[in-house]
Length: 355
Image (tube, rainbow, N blue to C red; front, top):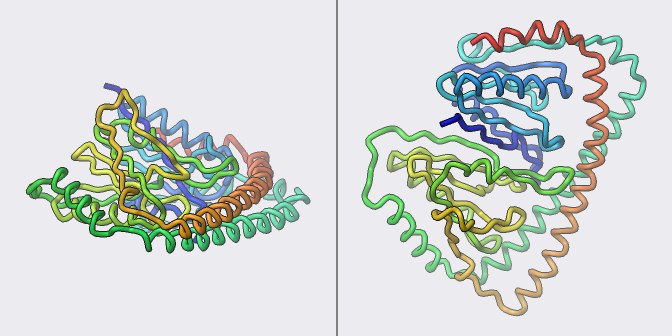
């Protein structure tokens, strides 16, 4: 069987700012290469080539995509038997933690013709405009989170928490029974998706491609989806099962999915903005309905409708500014690539292909 390629987003544009889980992914790897400097599109091309190179050697590959440019790669995680993470570490700026042993810095700054970059008189104004769009984008996302919080207030009032607790207890009994594994459990972290210039995006189908059992949570905001999944992950860890928390792309404190690899199982929030339903060809797909425990009054329904309109408007505004920000960011990256000495770039990165 051929090794798997899985796609994630490397960063998420959330209401609390940019979120990434790269430090957590670094802790999974035996060797980490931090590629510093020359933050243009050539780095993405290099990371894709590295993924192909090690995939041909039989390794499972995880690609981490850029939220601004969906086809661009920010990191490539080469899993067993190599366990190497290659990470573009200029944006976000990441530094080595275990220097010289696990973490190695590959400096690409000298590959840039600084005179060529500095002679581009438009870059200063582009950078200033880019920052203005960036701030407006995240101001809109912050507003969306506050509106979402108002939405949750309305639904919490109508929730039958005892009913949800019983449904959760039935799920844990079904998953674990009385089993307790005699091993130390591992906790890992990923992102499900993010807002992009083209709207909300996720990589759910890639993430779950090899899982046999998928539970699709259907429920309103504020009805305990994220809290329940965190609780389930903690239960699994206490029983010795590995767990992967897959974080929300809008609220950096919320979970959108939990994966239990040893059970070939995941449970995830399949409501807006990532609406999915069971597929006929996948016998292990099932809806996990918690909406049945929520019964808002007519007045609460009217409030929710008004809140929903405001929320969607804030998200649309954020997307608009994300698109403008991306247009300016593209110019910056193209200018960096134009000033890159490719011979020196290839020379400095050649050692990454020598395993």
